[in-house]
Image 1 (cartoon, rainbow, N blue to C red):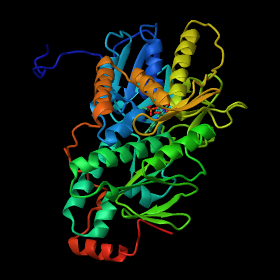
Image 2 (spheres, rainbow, N blue to C red):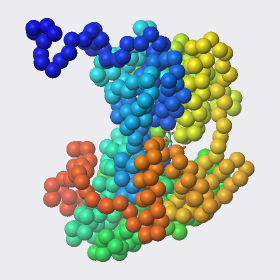
Image 3 (spheres, helix red, strand yellow):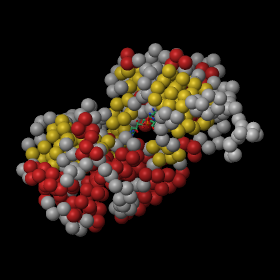
Amino acid sequence: MSNNQILGSIDHDKCKVADEICLPDSEQPRIVIVGGGFAGLALVEGLKNKNVQIVLIDRNNFHQFQPLFYQVATSGLEPDSIVFPFRKQIKGYKNVSFRLAEVREIQASTNTVITDKGKLTYDYLVLATGTKTNFFGMEEVERNSLGMKDIRDSLNIRHMMLQNLEQAAITCDDVERDALTNFVIVGGGPAGVEMAGALAEFCKYILPKDYPEYPSSIMNIFLVEAMDKLLIAMSDKASSRTLTYLENLNVTVLLNESVSNYDGKVVQTKNGKRILAKNLIWTAGVKGDFPKGIDQKHVAKGNRLKTDAYLKVEGQENIYAIGDIAALISEETPIGHPQVAQAAIQQGNYLAQMLNNLNNNIPSKSFKYTDKGSLATVGKRKAVADLGKLKFTGYFAWLLWSVVHLMSISGFRNKLLVGFNWAISYFSYEKSNRVIIRNFKRDSTTETPSKNNTNNALEKDKNIQKTQH
Ligand SMILES: Cc1cc2nc3c(=O)[nH]c(=O)nc-3n(C[C@H](O)[C@H](O)[C@H](O)COP(=O)(O)OP(=O)(O)OC[C@H]3O[C@@H](n4cnc5c(N)ncnc54)[C@H](O)[C@@H]3O)c2cc1C
């Protein structure tokens, strides 16, 4: 130890460059994977203990199980039962390192990625960065509504909902109470449908018990969909049955309607409807989310990266894209593969095999997707399933949905937690504790105005019905 060394620090020469991310020395080719979602994790699993060095980078230190976000948002599950730490996942994988960082830029000419914590070099780079919420350029809608693309979004929705219900019990103003207890969900895909179903059950079974001050009819749920049917990617049978299930749960479904603006209190649609609501949940679209450094000409619709049949990003030698961010455009898939977990997992598995082959000079076949079918649930005990030619709905579809989701959650403990919660709520309709642990605040520009302003604003809204044509 040198005389000048600070106690507690050791003399080592691994991190020679101050702004480099420190990694174990290795002679093996280095594969940097950005994003530990379904695609990135499948790739890690396929390359573990192989003759390559894997560096997994993610801006979170955990994997998120997005299909159950809506259950966290509606207090059905606690957040830690659907997220899983990467370090636990990679325990015992000798060739895999995890680094918590956000990749900001790719410098392909020098095989370098720049992160918020430093830079690192790669032999192969895999982008598995997924998507983010797409508000289609409507800034006011974005500022005033909540998306559902991250576990924090789910918690924000939960807190917004519980705070607004508490505030509704406090206020003596009828219009304000309506606004606080009306919910608008935008987007009739699986995320929107499942959210609407769960909220409707909350309203039916939890509201009367927790909030005896007001009847359950006070909470109105609107589902707004721009197309003429729900679950557009599924069969007509699945769509029409879903509509019936939701209507039976008193959800108002507005088809052929799209939201044009939202100021935090009144939702406006392109066809001129106005809905009074202080709760707007946006599930109507996503767009690819990747660091800068890829030429725009290689970007497809939806901000996805165009790849060849081996998932290599167009125009790049050693950069690949998998999962939601990848668009493999072919005659069979003119807009790329569906942005679902199965496609992401299959691409991760495929690329693991492909990179292994490449490392051992073995030729690979191109990627082929196997569609294993689609499922969506509407509240408890009802779901719709399209499995190839087999299409069924109701209780059996719901059982299948439950098993498939339970099996797909990472970690034994998480499976146990989710299974236990579901078992309790199956018999009792009881959900997790509905506690407001942190105060949810909107963007400061839409913070609750002073009392006088609020009253003036509400005065103006006295004429707005729950929906106004
Ligand atoms: C609410 C909701 C419900 C859904 N329900 C279903 C369903 O029922 N069935 C189904 O099949 N699919 C469903 N999906 C879609 C499914 O979740 C996605 O298709 C899947 O997650 C895509 O996996 P991925 O690995 O490509 O990306 P993701 O799972 O989104 O993972 C991307 C990862 O990259 C990380 N990341 C992103 N950018 C950076 C960066 N610059 N630096 C570092 N890290 C970064 C993120 O933190 C994240 O961990 C749902 C999606 C949502 C939002």
